Image (cartoon, rainbow, N blue to C red; front, side):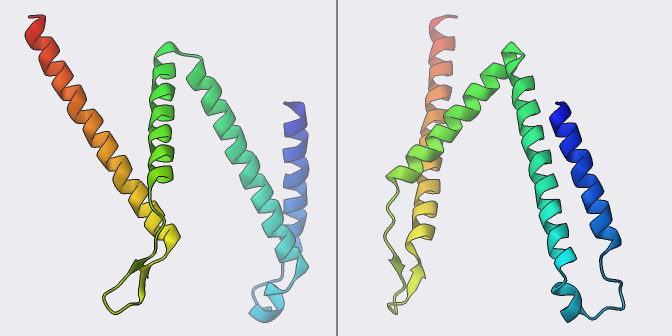
Length: 142
């Protein structure tokens, strides 16, 4: 953890120095946008954002894995992810043409929409099956 703290402090100092070196508001946009300090500031910002996202995901996952009830939630999220992956892989990637012959949706858009529809059908079938199972279980074990 000390390595992360040192890295964050170093990047913060570099960011502060770059911020001080940024062009002022009177500099024309054409000149300011080509300034290397502006580009470096964006790089430092992306690095800090990546570190923040990475640490947030790591700490969230470790917190989720520490509780029994939360493990069930992770299993549900993984199953939902699997449904999405299976749906996307089953979807057709054919182009959709309009009546005039122009392309209405390219292959990647068609595959995403088809995958979403298949996922909807699978999740709807699972919800109906769960409701039926619950109703039958109540009737039989009453």
